[in-house]
Image (cartoon, rainbow, N blue to C red; front, side, top):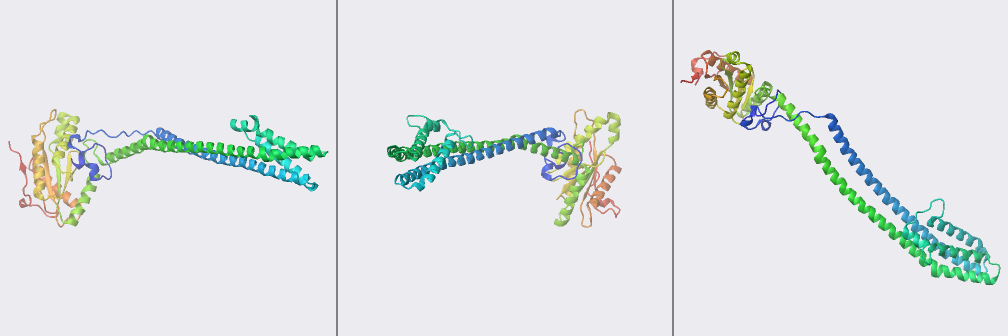
Length: 430
């Protein structure tokens, strides 16, 4: 695996080593992520996900609101029944006062009867306003069976009115005994049953609502997970792949899949600064394909392009994971070899030169390269100083023929002598 030629794309600005590493067999032929992202589809998918979430939250809100309403309704019904119990006892006591001759209680007794009748109309649903919709069990309690509660309450009120309006002692005594019997033996147990029925039904409806709320919560959580897996994750993945595609386009040579000049400069400058801080060597090599223009003229540009790609493949098999190779010109390539001295760089250059010269690829003409090598020195101020020496070494190799390597490890301000190139001008013999 080698940094500069794993995935094909065009030129860019930055790239980490991990992102650059891929297998040599995939050099320059890996298919790139699909870069076609439909804004409409992304918008619709996002809107659907948000809409589903909002609908579920609204359902949870209305379910909770229904529970609150149910609680309030149950409390009101139980409160009305309790008021009726209190009023029935009040009516019984006031009737007793009136029975023993306290006529001042007559008006209060009449008011209590009117209040209790109004509450009964409301509770049983007969009132035009604020009436309750009775359930089947409640309707049975109030209007069904042999002793309906509504009949008991209204019979009690009728007895009280007969007692209030009695014109003789016999009628008054009979009405008084009847209302006391209703109040003590019939009405209070019936009202207790009504209160228990209202409370029990309310508890049942609330429990159902709570169960529905739990189910809705589970559905909401499942919906959120599904949205994350089926909507948001694919969107994020597409965006990430598209960004990776753009990044590859910005950092790669589109023809060979090698790093472009910008990426090479960024990487080599970073390694140059690291080499200066750690006092470790950094080698640079510049390669040029011999007689490349003649290959284009004789075999066509398509064959020339194939030769450039083939060079990238062969070089990728030789370089280390930490090395980088870049296409810096038409048929010119630059290699940065971190933590490698001149001897090691010359070995790499020789392997590359020999591998190219001995390669016999189908449908490709034989071709060779010249390589110039240089290693960082204490006097180097910037990476370009090292790169210029490597380029000068390349010119030295090309000036003496083809299929050669040469090294130069003196600053460009000094004129090289034959002793400066060691070893240099290595040539294949056949």
